[in-house]
Image 1 (cartoon, one colour):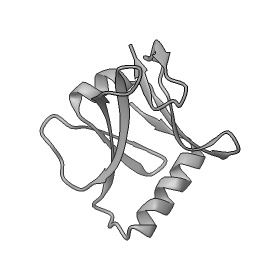
Image 2 (tube, rainbow, N blue to C red):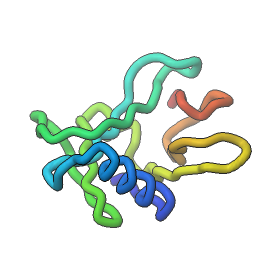
Image 3 (cartoon, helix red, strand yellow):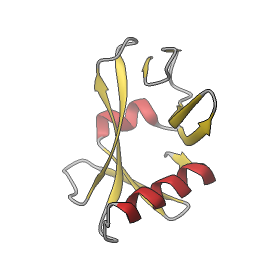
Image 4 (tube, rainbow, N blue to C red):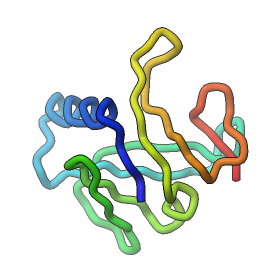
Length: 108
């Protein structure tokens, strides 16, 4: 399961409203090969379920993960920061043994 902080929920809601996405859209969180640590995080909005998708809901946000991503992201918390040290979504991933300086990639 992935959890979402209040700040992340507010930003996701804002982005969905700005993009005029309907209630049939959900947040797709995935992991792809690449980045300086080997694996990188990916966030997108989607409205099509794929075979093998795992669905969760936290704070009213519906989240989809493919099975491969679920194995890497189980227990992860999604946060959003808009402070002086950077702006964007942050993944607090208990499965990551190493992350890069920017926080956009990791390894297990």
